[in-house]
Image (cartoon, rainbow, N blue to C red):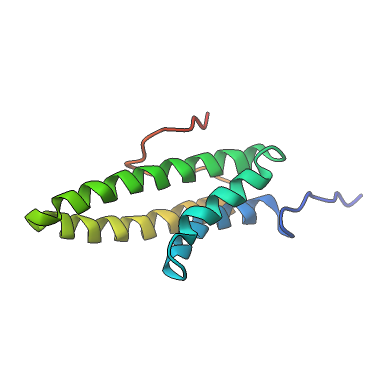
Length: 122
């Protein structure tokens, strides 16, 4: 028999997890959206699916870590190194989100390097 898989916003769990990771890049479209969208996506379905909960936790850990690193970059901006570090951080954010999304689509959980653990994911 065909098994009907549960859908999250009209998509399978792996695709939904992939979009949680990619949603943090939405700040390119509208400032702040990359912070709000992953939180909303995680909060709405974290209790329905363990994988969504884990991917959401890993993503939020990275977003909070990214905010802390960004604040440090802004403080160091007066020494020029902050500007360079901020550009590197933006590049890493893009790369990390894409890698995590690809892994999520394959059903794998990828923990962002340099991410501080605020929400346990194990």
